[in-house]
Length: 183
Image (tube, rainbow, N blue to C red; front, side, top):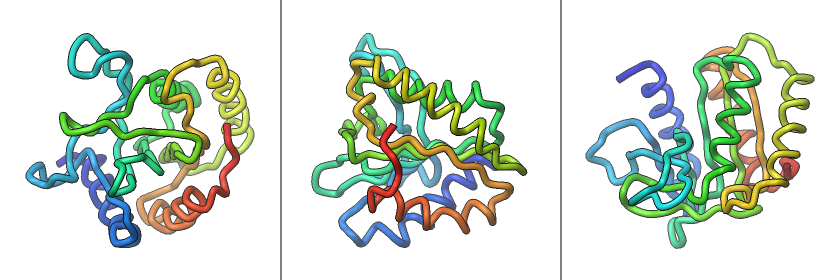
């Protein structure tokens, strides 16, 4: 398993420990493939079972058990790769007509869904992130796609895996409490 996959699987387990018993289910793109909670999480344009196009993949989804509605979608970038990489990942999600978990089911999104994009960086580029989110907000309002209904888009950086785990509980709490501003 690659470093990215291992970190993502550990992060999903950490989230599961806190949220799994609360009526939510944590899905992860990486881990034990025999698990019903492991499989690709993909933003699709068009029909995902036919002529559709896979736009981008996500790493973790926290969904409501009863409805499969996505509350938090997480993209983990092992490096920030610069603002264009982050922006491309966000737009790839928002341009889609659906988020799909493997061949199993769609994950409905709405204004209560938060997209968290977490990138590894030694520095937190506040001005760059604000500018990026401003551009994303302008693009988002012009999209007529289902995924553009996602309410909040949050970009955060982490220096290392320890920093990621230290910050993760507050990010999750912010998403579930509606703390993050809608983009």
